[in-house]
Image (cartoon, rainbow, N blue to C red; front, side, top):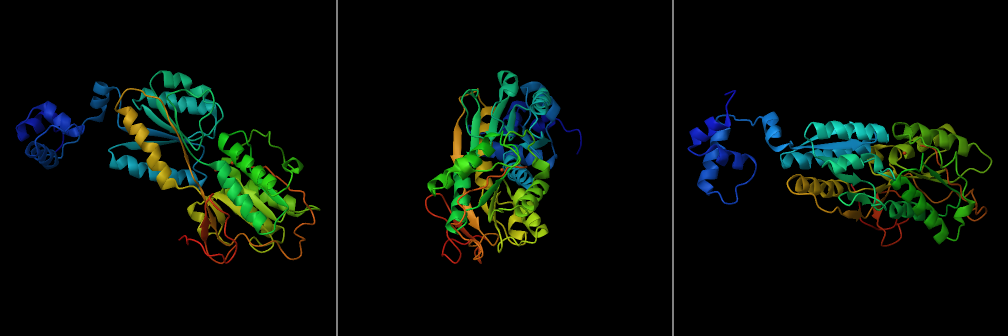
Length: 391
């Protein structure tokens, strides 16, 4: 039946329109079970669907969340959207997806449009150091969760921040390679002008220092000051980095990539240079996207627990959309190292201690015979070491 109104539902159920409204909006704590069942059955029988535009006019908001990601060209962000949408749908919300390419002006425009359309909750994933560009939106009532970005000095007090511990993840990746005997390592990224990337580079350097290597000796390629993030070009950037470095006079024996797409590009670039990932060179990614396990060789990577992170991301949106503004919170989640086949002990033809210099390379973006995991509590397992299996 089309064109059914809330008043017709109320009349058919023998209740008031406000009772039907309470059912639709989940305000049923004080409602008798028989009344609730009767109203729900009537809504189903009449195929009643609330007028969302009318609801927005009454409440000033709709049950929609905005999700602003850098680029769905990186499958990690598509996976986050899928996880968040599943949780949102279960709570009666929908998700609008926007690609910002980490452009502050673009993020501001999306935020303005979402707020104008009655959306009052946004998950922002660019991880830019400053959120000054969105402060006018927050002052107008937009509620925001910063995803994959730890809280920074000067952040608005209402901002919630949820992130994996990026520094810890990079440390896990770097330690794993050092334990395999590698001493000439390359850190491949893009611009490191985002919070998450800076943290990963910091973790990489911390692991080198812990191993007695001087991070100041690191060679940065082509320069950490580049403003190009390369979210959609991470694979090609990784490929170019591997080609250039492996063709040079002092090639690295192992790579730490800023994300899995970059790592996949490095593996391809190694092949272009006549090397095989997992045999001649080792490569570690970050994120553990679906392709990581399907790629050949299966990619050793740092896993971000997306299901857990998405679940933690949504409750602040739901709670704040339904209540007055409150102080934000910051949550840091532990990553895990997943060891697959793209890493192996340093080749016997390369002296493990012959050259202490470490190459840190930036240029694009967050093994053993079987897959295994290690967390920050202990050292990552080497080839053949027993540990928890990952499917």
